[in-house]
Image (cartoon, rainbow, N blue to C red):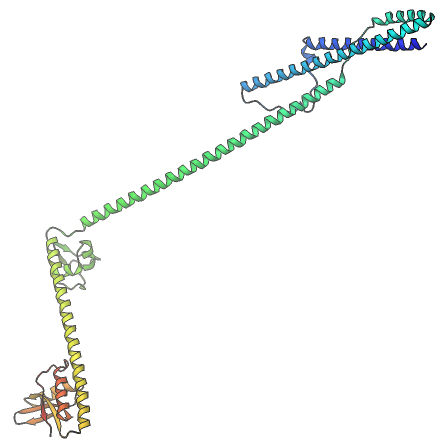
Length: 402
């Protein structure tokens, strides 16, 4: 009984291995056969139903298709390798089980005869089970694993394509920004050049206009008559003909501040006349300046002399006071023919700050400044009077008062 159970177990393992081997061979043969289009179309997974990224051109499409074909061939080769390995392991297991079963059968046959009949029955059962009808099974686990792998690979490819598109978009944006910056820089440079050119053109036009105005406003080559219009004046006409207002006034015997009358006719001097009159005006101005400087020098000299005479007079009066000199002296500044003339001269000296008296004599009326105590003070007073520009006299002399 023990032998029968072990024999049945070995026979079952052999039959199961044969069935699995047959199914695998059948599956490999079916996979190598071309399948109809309807059989090759699998139900798309949720990941496969998502829109695939568009390729950029036909070459990229061909490259992706070739890559997919290589991956498919690699998967088929891997499946064939695994099937061959499984078949080898199965054959080894079957051989080991068969050897063990034969050993046990020989041992049992050697121990009992009835076991032969059971062995025969077992052989009959084995013969009956040797040719079972085997149907190919579908390996659901391997199909699910392959589908999941395909879905994961598709998602990875989709992510890679999206990342590539994003990188291309970022690169395009950077290129656009750089191109825009370059265009703005060129535009700014061009605008600056245009502004500089415009400024230069305006400066050249302004210089040209000034040159034209200068030529236009130059004095005429020959003297010409001009009739005064409304709004005209010596200053305006002098600016119009580019000449000093003093020259234009001198050419017409007018004062520079004279107002012109409407319809009045004046002479516009020629360039030569303007140059001559300008030289004469400059010479006259220089003469006036020299005269002014000379007068200032004389006035300063006279003031210095007057100040010095006043100082001497003060010192003389102080000296007379210290020495207590006796007698009074006066300074005769004029001898008038009559009293009226004497009074007129007396007023002149009084307005200059002197004490004046008149004294009639047989030869005329004396005009005397003073008196001063002591002859030294009288002499100092005489020097002061002779140097005083207000009285303008140089004939003063000292006389004894009493």
